[in-house]
Amino acid sequence: MSRKKDYMPTNVLQFVAFMQGIINYVNTQKTAWSHIPAQKISNLSALLDDLEVLKDTAASQRTPAHTLARNNSQAAATKALRAFVNQYLRFEPVTDVDLVEMGIPVRDTIHTTVPPPRIPVEGVLAFPAAGLVEMREIRGVGTPLDKRADHGVRIYYGIIGTPSESDKFRITDRPRTGDDLPHSVFTRRKHQRFDFAGESGKEVFFCMRYENMKGDAGPWGTIISAFIP
Image (cartoon, rainbow, N blue to C red; front, top):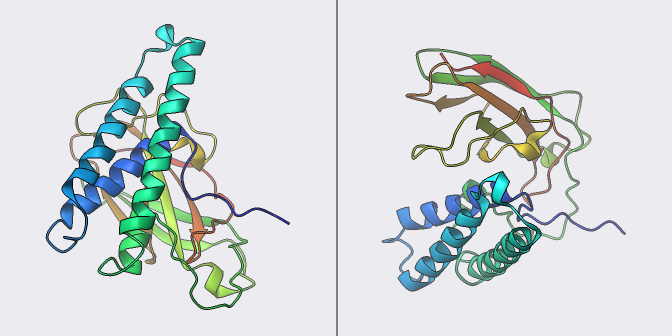
């Protein structure tokens, strides 16, 4: 029997971006989500800060002890984040739309079998103005066996360069798959615009895959890259 893939990223860059995305999203909902104690959010932020320090250690200073400390820090953050999701984000007023936006799979309350996506995704880049990049003509490569499996597309992306205040999660090498890209956004549309103001001339990479409502992911599409106008 195959084991369902965990929605918590194991790649440290992706996990840090994923956790930061949830914290940021929750902070924008403070008024509506009054059931979440502020201290709980602060606790998550502290764990994330600790992990970021270890993640950003220069390669020349990384030792087996550092790697162990980073792995332990990520494990502690993962455990705390999972508990937070289950305790505060699995019921109203948090909606399924909120969960999908945060990258958290929606639990299947209807006992029907929805298969995982089976086909890759492709698209075409366009450049409507300086700093703007659009993924257009998002579509599957082939015919899905069950359209419910291809509920939406998660677009992963990352810019090569040195981390900055505007983007702490740069990539340092050309990615081989979407697993190497730190950021992601979910969409059900056939196009998605990205605003990379101030990043003109830098190389950006994208990779997409389908997700069903339960968060099961399909195969990666090809890496698409371009220089930001």
